[in-house]
Amino acid sequence: MLKRIVRMTFQENKVEEFLENFNRNKEKIRNFPGCHHLELWQDENFKNIFMTYSFWEDEKSLNQYRDSELFKSVWSVTKPLFSEKPSAFSAKKIIELP
Image: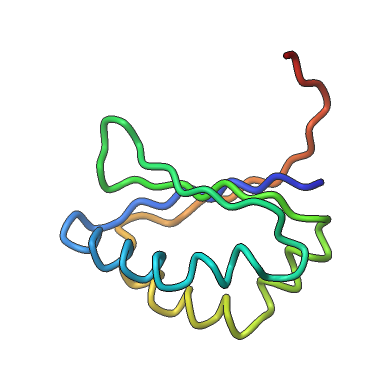
C-alpha cells in the first residue's frame, strides 16, 4: 500500500474555492480504482495550507489516477489557486506501533 501526502498552500482569498472544488470531487477521487483512503487536513496555524492524505494500491494505481480525466479536471481548477508550489511525498509503512 502506497501512502501519499500532498501539501498545498493557497492564496488566502482562494481557500473557499479550493474547498468547494474538493467537496465536489472527493467521492470520485476516493472511489477511483486503486484508492483505498482519502483525508483532507488543514494546518493548525496556517489556515491556507492543506494536505491530502491518501492510500493507493500501488504506484501504478496512483499514476493511473494522475493520468485520468478526473485528475486533470480537478487539478485545472486547483492549480491556479496556489500561492506556492505544492509538494508531494509517496511512502510505504515500514513499522507501526499500537
